[in-house]
Length: 159
Image (cartoon, rainbow, N blue to C red; front, side, top):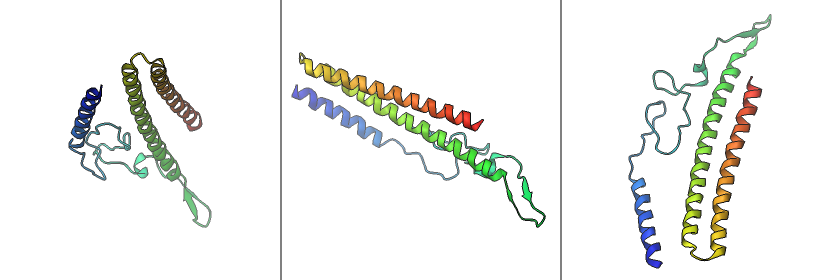
């Protein structure tokens, strides 16, 4: 049994070190071309046709000035553009977080499966492994439902 754990640890370390030598994506402040390995990009849906990250002013729409008789006023559409840009950014961040929760949940399912396989005839070990797998799946379902509720509420308020 000791040999099995040692071999498993060597395999896991080899896999982890191979991930460390993957070519890293080059950081570019204004480029939308390129792929990410494990997570979606925070600027998805914020790219122009020129493969640049758009600013809130690039979202479109005409500025409407509310000027009084003295020539003083504000531009109303700027706030709408910023709000739309922040909404897209928030949606992308929620997607990144849901992806992270999915990876963590998958890790706990694998861990629970490993514990289940190695528990042998121990009924307490089998029960603990089943509970780990069940809790991981319940956490994944709760996180998916939370994202669905957030998107529903944002859709109702967003019009």
